[in-house]
Image 1 (cartoon, rainbow, N blue to C red):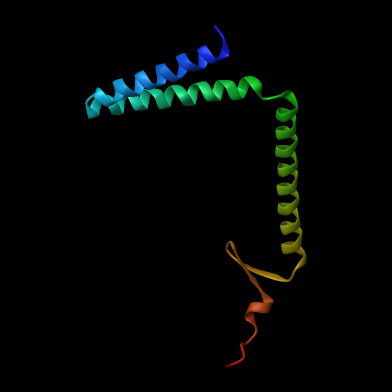
Image 2 (cartoon, rainbow, N blue to C red):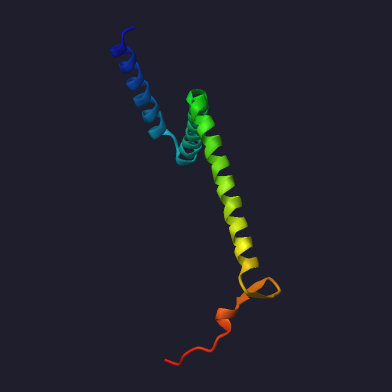
Length: 106
């Protein structure tokens, strides 16, 4: 079979399936749509996992590690800043001295 014949058979089969779908009652049409959607998700996920390269997986892992390190660095900077500043705590609420100054009336 040539490429044109394969394409013609594929188009004809899609048209036949859509014609059958139109003849079905609404409840069966919904079930068919759900089954097709579920199969599409499974197939596309499998194809994606199959063709995803090792370099892409390594890049994702490196990006996740970089994000983890950046998060830890930001948390540590916040901890150091809260220790270094003149901060008054009431429970888990930080009350810096700047907020305790009297306000100017407007």
